[in-house]
Length: 172
Ligand code: MN
Image 1 (spheres, rainbow, N blue to C red):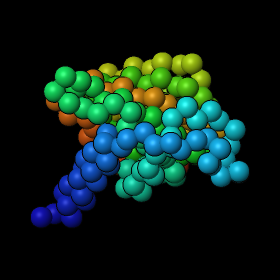
Image 2 (tube, helix red, strand yellow):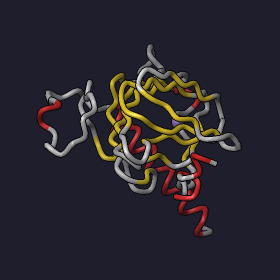
Image 3 (cartoon, helix red, strand yellow):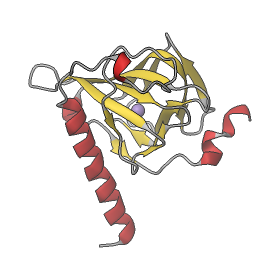
Image 4 (tube, rainbow, N blue to C red):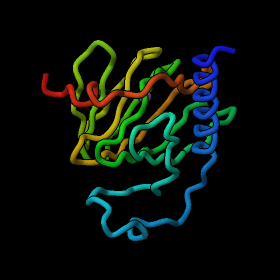
């Protein structure tokens, strides 16, 4: 097997495992007060969740599943907290994705388009099979609720990391 294919398969597998773990997380009695005192001053409506794997995220991103997928509800709902500077790899969703930003400031970019600044109160729709990434701004973290419909078609297909050059291309 070629090395590139192997890496892609590994990254895909890690993504599936991560999604699975995230979606099966029960909401624990963690409270915002349990967090480190040096945590930035963002609202934590939901528990922080699990640190995303380095293969899929640059910096620290924490994911918690809020709605389990089953035969009735085929929509994945969860929360991701991106620390300042953290972002996802490039990826696609077979049925698209809706992001509801509940606090902080972040970036969302569809391939070939400028970076879009997103902040508390914004709702972003990313179309099906459209290559994109999302994450925090360099100085302020981001709290995003994600809604992935029609998961019977799949949840996410992971791709390469967003480079620093791509991430910092905000003012050009
Ligand atoms: Mn996405």
